[in-house]
Structure formats: structure tokens, C-alpha cells
Image (cartoon, rainbow, N blue to C red; front, side, top):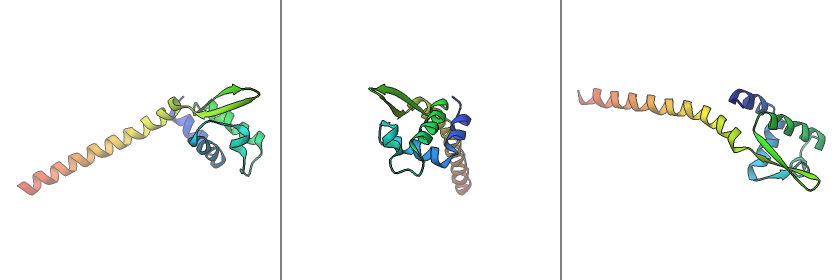
Amino acid sequence: MTYGVAFTALADPTRRAVFERLGSGPKPVAEIARGMAVSRPAVSQHLKVLKAAGLVSDHPEGTRRIYTIDPQGLRALRDWLDRFWDEALENFRVEAEAKTEKDRS
């Protein structure tokens, strides 16, 4: 899974809402769909896309499938975002040290 595929999957607001509902823990489709403006079959289709993007995984439990956020897929997104955070912090450090050096002169 690449971060680009994950971002594309999460670009859809309904799909993002489905993904966010899994933030509190594993859930079956019926529980994810409860209270949403889309049908259970539509939620299943969104979960299929999220699974293909590597963002969720599922396992059978009786006659239901239980979905959960896949930490490995989420890690790819985080690693990509952290790269920018690390660069921003390094740039800040360089600027702060340059200002400190300038103030000493």
C-alpha cells in the first residue's frame, strides 16, 4: 500500500466517516452503518475500498465480518506525514540557531 492510494481512498467524505468510526475499535458493518446517511451495502462497498487501500482489515466472527483499522496501512500515511514534520522542525532549528548567532554578533 502506498500513501497515495490511502489518501485517494480517504478523499471521499463518506469513506472517511466509515474509517473514523473504526477509530474507537473493531466493528461489524451493521454497527458502522448505524446512523449513517448511506445503506449497509454502501458501507460495505466503502469498506472494500478501504481494505484494498490497506487501511482496514477484517476477520470473520460467526456470520459477520468484523472490521478494524490496519495499523500497517496507517503507518504508511503517518510516515509520509512525519517526513514533512521532521523537515519543518529541522528548518526551524536552523533558523533559530542562525538568529541566535546573529543576535550574538
